[in-house]
Image (tube, rainbow, N blue to C red; front, side, top):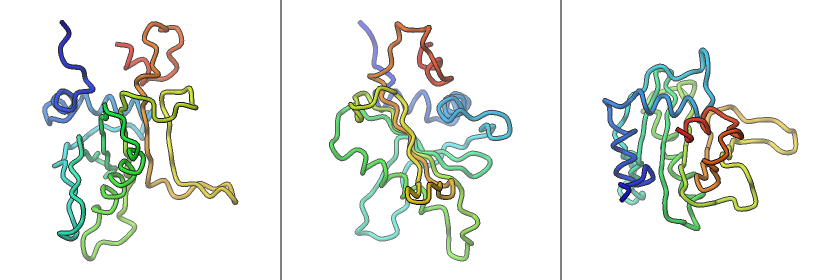
Length: 179
């Protein structure tokens, strides 16, 4: 009999979301985001997963894993097993909450750093796409210009990973999944 999967919230948090295992989460994030050289995450602090509410009437958000690197970049790592028709909106809500809690009274907007949402999905959210990793950023279609690089969403559709096709592994993250 097999034990619980990494897609189980509790197991996922125990493996990646505790301070003593920060190096594992750091390696995973570097692989997913394909960070190398000076962009690589070298230090990571696991933060309290609750997003601060500005008002009592605001919906409460508790993230699976919330972290910040030495450069101030912030990360929300979620695992979702059950299909939720509103998951895309929910992940955007979580990301913008992570983004908006960066500044305190008196802080300048130049202090804003990148916020990244990463969702491990145990189902297909984009059935019309073949790839298992989709990345979304803000973009001006008319002028074909990318907005400042401060918000980014990653969706990892684990059901699309073919473990038996080791010769087709294309990214560091796919090689990580194959282990």
